[in-house]
Amino acid sequence: MPRQITTAINPKLGITPGANTSTATGTGVDCSGYEEVVYVAMVGAVSGTTPTLDVKIQECLTSGGTYTDITGAAFAQIVDATHQFHLGVRVNPLKPFQRVLATIAGTSPSFTMSVAMLRVNPPLVPAAAGA
Image 1 (cartoon, one colour):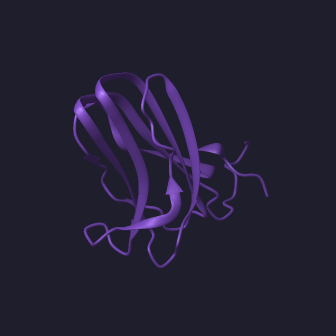
Image 2 (cartoon, rainbow, N blue to C red; image 1 turned 90 degrees about the vertical axis):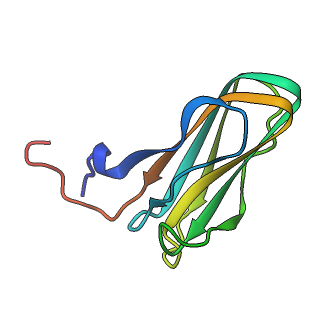
């Protein structure tokens, strides 16, 4: 049965695009019904003395609950400009809410960045008539 691309890939923002100078915590996103989330981190300009950016993914049972790190769901540390990274993370049905945590360190660090979330592989749905 064919899928519609708009139901097979459902994007959300994990971290809103902009210049970040301190740790940024994304809002929890309900990933129920999806098998996986592909995270795409995009980093532009970087400034400061020895700036570092550590991006990891966390999960929780509810949107406002206590989030815990997902084992192995972290990007390699970012220390300079102009990078694009992607990371696939499985959805735990017992903890379907996921969020991004971007920890920024260094002396006067600034990272122009964003993280997109692409929720993928929902159950099969019928294609629209005529599609």
